Length: 577
Image (cartoon, rainbow, N blue to C red; front, side, top):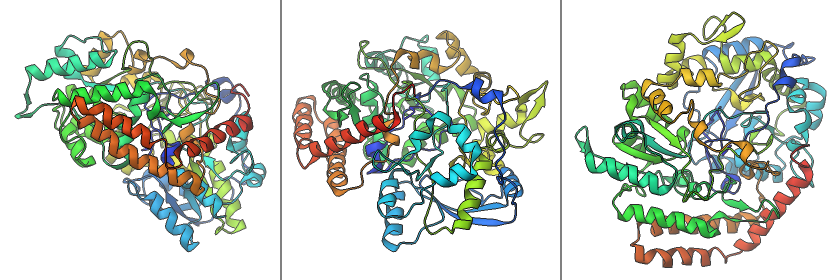
């Protein structure tokens, strides 16, 4: 989902948030407002950094953060020095944010700051969140400047215009420069086969089959043409979400939304997707899909990729980043992957980079357990994080340590860049760079500040500098400078009036949540069963799934989601507004 986002918080999705969940690898980006951003320096908050007396905020984050060092990393120490703020953070382990939020609601005990992801609606219904509208108006000039004409998109709903969440998982005016999703093929495979065209699933299959026939083993272990990660919610990322991208639909989580009528339905009901899953069934029966794909755990999936014997993936790079880091550490750069906009047939276009406008998104909320005095201090802290100084620190780090300024341009030294690329986990734990995005309202990739430097380190020159030689060679063979060059761009599609549905707060009432969960139970059982069935069994299994998805209150649930989309479009106005 953006389908791309380069801050790439590991966008962990859970069952109810799936209604609004999706994590594509590419786009969903907006027009770069560099001119607007570069003309003036954001206004200084009247007290954004004035009160630096020590203050601590308790925090719960719905994403895992394994490198969190209690703000004792290099960046965290500077944040505390500049603002006085220390965050006592607790972070979800994969799949546990729902349970944790449910326990909070049951007990009525909340941390002061929350990053609740798809559970926002439940917290609003429980009366647990503060309306931030007045706090932003009085104490957050930097946040107001950043969002500017998009402030409407921070409103909770048509009926409740309160601002309960300050979006921090989406960046303002982001331009995606790189493709992190699509269908992936190992660079060694591409080179040996002469960098073949890979446009359709048939092309993808042919490449894997040809190389597999030549190399049944790699480094003494059985070669795996294609493996999938179906562990818990990640089944969406590598098994079910690719079905809509491969058949010409954008990422709206579990739903397909008609762009003309805004009618929403579970995307599995689209006839084209049945044919995509039929192709996966064919791949399984051809022996090209890992037989353990639907039984392995996430760590087993990553271990197989780390071994260098997996030829192809259908995934987002954030999901297998850990495995790629291991390959880099071992010097196996030819075992990294190229990204391709593969679709079922050439009549479809991959919509990873469809323009979602400046979408709202998951973000930071204040709980009602926080005192009014601390609410003011907290909003001023967030406003400082949204200042140029704060954004520069969070994105680039400390001048003279993590970057230098040469001839007016910020430059990352070669040794720092090498560690950032090839040992990112250790780099992040030491520097803190990348750990503070849940607390940072910020401009996205491609936006420049008043010094004519990019706010983020993710821009074309930096991306190409980070490529290994095998990757540069592959891109040159495809007449591309980045993998995104192979994908359709946002200019090829109309702007989505509702942004990205996976970022919207889904209804929390039982008439939505119960049938939605039922739909997930149905899908997560039927799709794997259909893929591993014999070809003769496939239709019966898939058609029974469709029948089941038309019962148990599911059509009524889809109608509720349709109304949510229509209300969102009405509240936000047209994409140009």
